[in-house]
Length: 141
View 1 (cartoon, rainbow, N blue to C red):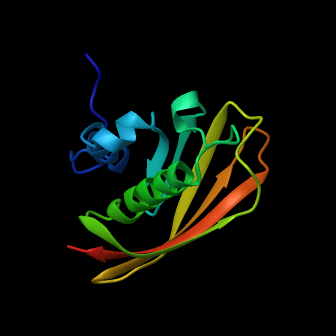
View 2 (cartoon, helix red, strand yellow):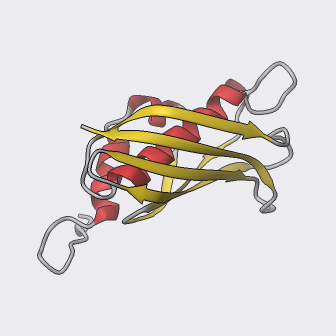
């Protein structure tokens, strides 16, 4: 049996709570998202490149890249204890996602206010090269 991680007050840790959210997300499961690290205001995850996620040119479909970014950034925003929904998003595709086993996403909260969070995300390949970046605005429900 896996021991639950808790904070100093005995509550489930941020990482544990966010892993539970990801486990309930069928789309994250479909794209094979693995949450690698999570703490307040930060999340890091990856997905393995696979034929079902490819575009017609053999790289990862841009919609999948965006979905990973939105999900990981949403986890970072939710790490403060809020349920969040995306209000606005922007992504810059800089290089095709090819020639790497995994696409990694790192998301950092830039501002978490009463009702709104702003989060930036970067997607890299296994070699650490920047493939895309994105910014998101989330509403706290």
